[in-house]
Length: 461
Image 1 (cartoon, rainbow, N blue to C red):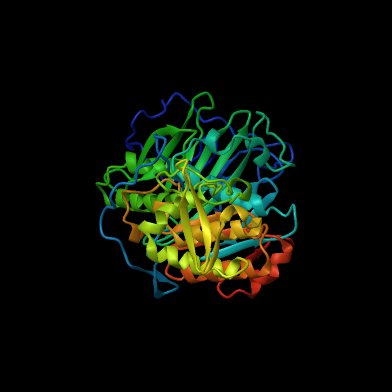
Image 2: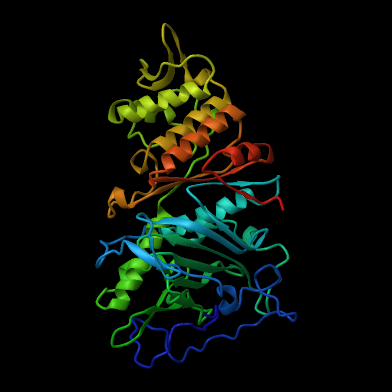
């Protein structure tokens, strides 16, 4: 797929199209700089054959949120790897993150386990790595490109030089494993002179390109898409918006009448489900101390409504609430016999640590580390229904896994609290429902490496 008009899918004269770009529109030539460098850190956003050569997939919807229809056809339970039958993941999950050219990262490929921590000194790109993951998750959920990248120019590699048309950009991608096996998504974004997706590729487990998009006419706010059909015509072509992820749109555009279309739909839906099942958590202790008004009880990103959520879990999830109280005793100073919620006269609620025969301690009196520890533990012990995130109502909970994104996981925590939190994370991740991807500093990396079941990616080298 050439970002400016090429394609990797088979060309056929009878390929159907809905509102296809007119044949009079010719693909603009890909111009690279004099030294032939590209957007991977030295020059332009062209061409996609180089930009997405390593890559895989991407789908996107026209609405603000992508819809995931009911899965079509039987779902395979196992796959063949190196001549032997290997079990496939039951729930879609992101198992690899690729930063081909993103900010300070070039040709970076990171495998993700159930609990993965990125470690390294300040400036090594830990937060940027997690930002790329969250960006893909938001694109998969239906957010527009300008919502996801309000400062897109900062994502372009610093030494990337514009091409003859003044274009610069970046490239990111991922692999989502699940019932369909590993499915790859790669996206090339033009940041300058105008923000737009200029190339996207979705690749199935057998290496087949299931979706490819390319910019044919720079004057139109659309890319030309081609997806696998394998029917009377092997390829279907149609324009898609250049500010939305094409992969998330496929469930809305593909009929599912042929075996090829079913393959495309299954891969696209797996990627969308895997990406959308993410929650970025960044507890802010300074916002967590004051009493809050009771509400629907869904934890926000900054966890400022922690007391409201505890008010809900106290009655709706008693077993998880009791487990959280036990975890609190391992990370908070002094004896902890329970977590309670007090209703105040002004109609607000506040959470307290119960101390047995001693007066309860309002959470507002706890240290920053204790508050962050409690908030992070709560996110691990709950699920999408208790977190303020875009739930995938069309997919049964048993077929979903939640990935928590925690930048600065160790911020404000002592060694004991971090160790307890990692033990909780690996214990919960063992059943496949919840995964964790976070960042830690150099001083916490040693503790993380000693924790069984934790994958540490060192970005310091």
